[in-house]
Image (cartoon, rainbow, N blue to C red; front, side, top):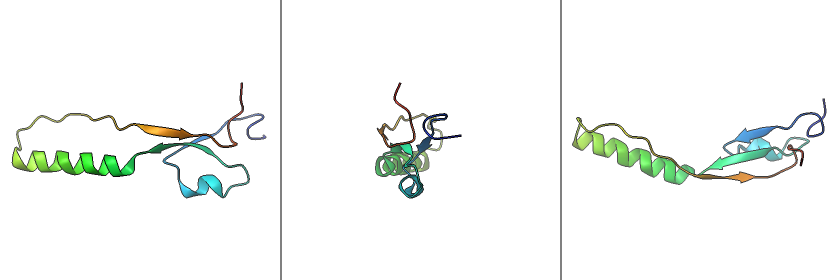
Length: 72
C-alpha cells in the first residue's frame, strides 16, 4: 500500500511525528492554548457555582496539508 496513491492518512493535533515520517502526514491542528483557557474558565465557573449546567465549547483549528492525502 502506498501513501497517498492507495490510501490517504490524516492525523490529529499536529503531533511532531507528522513531519519526521517518510511521508509527511496531513493533520488537523487544534488551538491548544485556547482549549486550555476555555477548560480552566469552565472549571473555575463550576467551582464558583457547582450547580452550573455543563455546556460544550467548539474550538476551531486548522488543517495543515502535507503529503499524505491524494488530491482528487
